[in-house]
Image 1 (cartoon, rainbow, N blue to C red):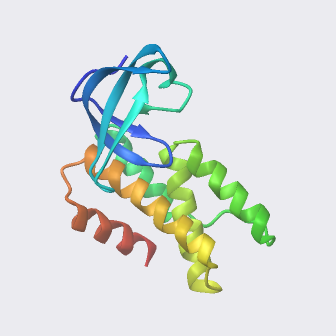
Image 2 (image 1 turned 90 degrees about the vertical axis):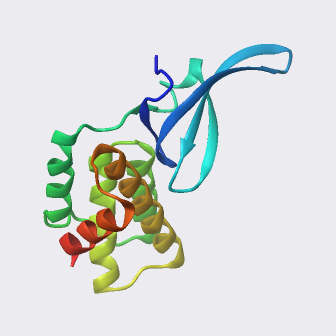
Length: 158
């Protein structure tokens, strides 16, 4: 169970801090919810405590894993399907997994594809989402600010 102040990642939304644990009545039943503040998107999200594991809520990586994430960004691209729909679904599945290493791989691969052939509007949006998720977790795992984090990622992918 997470506590107030814990830094966590909510797949598809990014990293944030648990600001509170509240009880709310929904459809006649009382449930406990984590109140998660996501600074990148300036959102607050309520996640049922009982479903937190199912939705993939997890701790932010620690500082020792940051180098591993950056190493993934530096690696060669992995083969992607030439079929747009299949490629999109595969990348979406990786982002939904909540695994920061998978998200970093999506950012790396889509950035390379953008430079080579360009991206469709759907893949462009996916790349932007994956970058935001990556940036949000790296910020909470390090002492970097947003601009510094983006700069580091951009330099690696250049």
